[in-house]
Length: 299
Image (cartoon, helix red, strand yellow):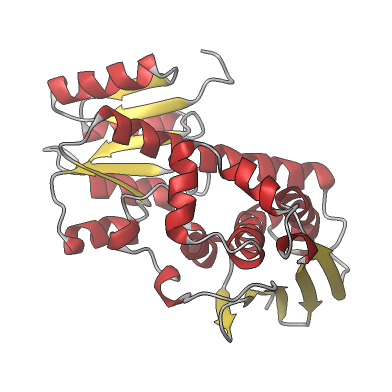
């Protein structure tokens, strides 16, 4: 297997549906491994927990259903961040919420088109590989900032945000955990805060494959070119806090703190909820939404 090739585990007890999934993903260039039952899937995952970049999981299977596999995956630290895409015919909010609470941040409702399948898998694996690169960079830098008590940084671009996140995550006891959420919050401060890219506009830009081009364009235009975001860090005996502030108009953040069934089928919109669930012990937006404080408990 090519180690650079993105590997997806497809779990479905229905042969024709599984064959269609495998064919579509293989034609797109993915390495695909099949499992025809829940037990077979778990055997593969248990044997090689770091093999897969995404799991495409059928909700209803006779021997071990998708929710049980999902719970097992999310209980293992080495697999906790692997994206699980739940495919199901159960499209009620309650059913979707059960999956979201168990850790399925991506959803496909049967029947779905090949384009929809590929868009969701691309989003899930893109995010996961991006997170892994950040975590690897943190490990290379080492724990250089464990003695930091107070600091203030200014950043303007996505590259500055990612580079800064990989540096200052080393102030935390578990930098690999923290860097994922910190980078999401800092990128949010640039994209949605300073540059004013709304949720629907980001959806459109991602579908057109031109989000990064639009960010680069806006960074050269007034008034966006002069805007900066700030990161302030403070350590006490009990906690480590990261305060991020942008110069945008703010947003209604209340609907983004939890995974929502309304966004389960979208290719983005999970960053704040994932940061709160995975990276920090507390996360609070303040004022009009252009300031967020994320906290790690030290004692």
